[in-house]
Length: 253
Image (tube, rainbow, N blue to C red; front, side, top):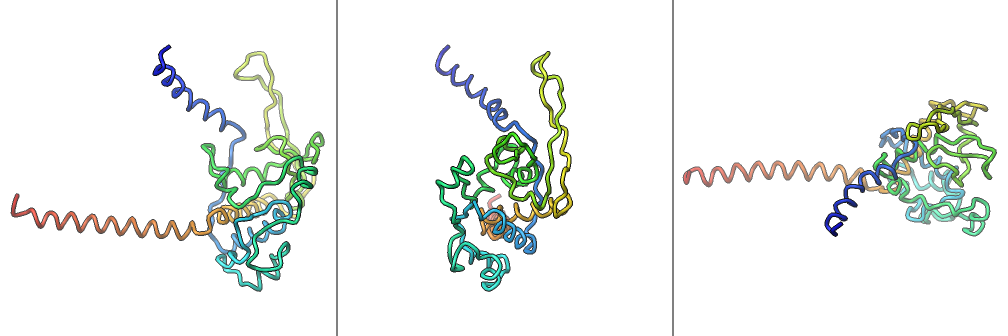
C-alpha cells in the first residue's frame, strides 16, 4: 500500500477512534446558571467539601468578590486554609500523604471544568454527572465507585448530602458478541437518605459545578458580553460601509 493510501486509511479511522474514546456513561446536561446566589452557594460547597483535598492554585480568595461577596464575608465564612484573603486556594494535605491514602494525588481543580470537556459533553456536564453517580461498592478501597469514572480513587465527598445509593445491574446479551452476557446499568437504589432529597441534591451539585465552571474562567461572562457588543458593532459598520460604497459608485454604474 502506498504512503498516501495509508494516510487516507488512518484519517478515515480517526472519527471511529474518537467515538470509541468518548463512549461511556451518558452525561446529563448541567444546569446553566450565572445567578450570583447559585455561584455563592457553589463557592461555599467547594470550600467546605472539595478544598480539603483538592487545591485551586490559580484562584485567589479575593476573586470571590466578583460573586458579590465582601472581604469580611470571605474571611469569616470561606477562609479556612489561608490567613489572608489575597492568598491562593491551596490545601494543607501533603502530596505524598494524599497518594498513600487515595492511591493518587487529587488534581488541582482550577480549570477542571474546561479540562473535562469532550465530544460527549462539556466539562460542566461531566462534573455534574460524575458528582451524582457515586454508589456504594464494598469491593473498592474507599467503599465507593462511580459510573462516569469506574474505580475512581476519590471517595464520595458529598455522601452526607446525597445519602447512600447502590447501582443496579442486569445481565443482558452483548449486542456485539453473540452468546456473551454483559452487565447493563439499570438505575440506582437509595439505601440511606441524605440531608437533601434528590431534587435538592441535584440543585446543590448544579451550583457547585456552576462555580467550578466560573472558576475556570472568571471573566467568561464579561468576555461573552464584549463579544456580543463587538459583533453588533461590526454588523453596523459593515452596513454603513455597504451603503457608503453604494453612494460612491452609483454615478459610475
